[in-house]
Image (cartoon, rainbow, N blue to C red):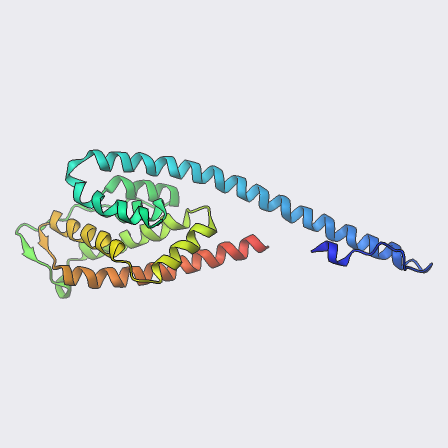
Length: 225
């Protein structure tokens, strides 16, 4: 800090070193004030965005709860909320089966909406060696949405906490994502086993953790500038 370099000038001589030191401290103080002001502005801007996003997500959560077809998924979401997973992250998971959430995330991220209308004519079992391109693309876009929704998080502390949570196996989270995954495939007339769904969940969480670490690192570095 700038105070560590402060010199009162009491031991200075008549050569002007005291004045020089004072000017140096003054410049450092000005620089510190400039950086502090920039951080304050960023915090205020982030808080404003966070309030906007929180209201948006709360709106979706109410709609999800009111739709009876999502009851089983909602019952798995709340234990995750009790574990202190950020709301943005949990709502992002739901975006696979709730199209309007994906649209909102993509509007905020400046990306085009996903066009998906695939449905198998006959009920069949999942085969990852023969997954239609439409399904593969939809899953990829879903993971992308979950990456983007956490990038919207205004708090680096919350992002760090999410990373710490994902570093350890959590049955409640795995069950929630797995059931969203199963629900999605069932909606397009495809049955996927829990074992296969769990394999995908493990891979998806691993990919998300890498992405969130990158977001957190960039945010911390930016905050130190």
